Length: 310
Image 1 (cartoon, rainbow, N blue to C red):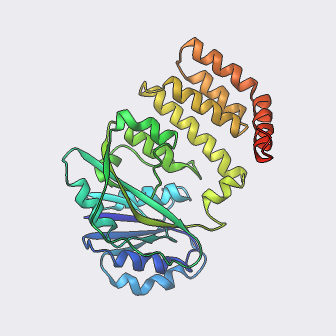
Image 2: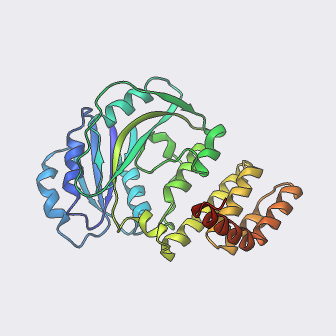
Image 3: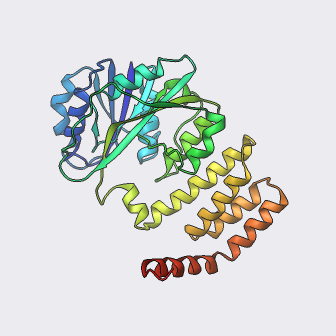
């Protein structure tokens, strides 16, 4: 059975469409745990008809879990009964073959601990046409080989685009201190434990884009989200150093992140807590402290390119 964990907060205007897409799943062996983070709208009234389905449970987050997405998801994990866990957001649309394809893929090899798939974004009314063909292209993901690709977003892991074996969360939970980038930190922790999986090149999930999303707030520079991203980065640095998995490439990646986020505290944390060779740290320090000049030159070059001067 698959345990679908859905945190919700004041999404009465979207959640019904999401639940309907779950009910439309070809794979029927699932439970849906809706963890309410204290909604003040009519979410519960919208949900009442759906609670007649014994597979759907409505739960109010209790005080043992912090308010926020990580706390709600952790509560869902603790209450889940399935062999597999997947996280869906309360305003998105799920492909009807999502669970069936992911389950089939993860069962194809005994060593697979997760199945990653593609996610697309939509705005306004959902009008996508589902691709129901069984044609799939896939590739293996080795946790201890590919974790750096997750961290650098070369191989992004969206929170809702992965089906996990529950045992991946045996000793790992979402960091409830984070209000953004919590899946980045959590999934890094899972992969660096040596968990292997498979990635399929097929869109099985559709994320709704709107101004109130956490991602939207981060890219608009909302301090709450930016600071959470910095905190998540520091936590990942700790994970890598504890497991002796920090590399020169990742050290440089986090240093450049500190530049882009204008976070001196992140750079100092990285420099203090990472055991990297002197040459790399010295060279990176030079780039970091010269970064204001570098950024000015990059912006100037970009303007010249736009004007077709170079």
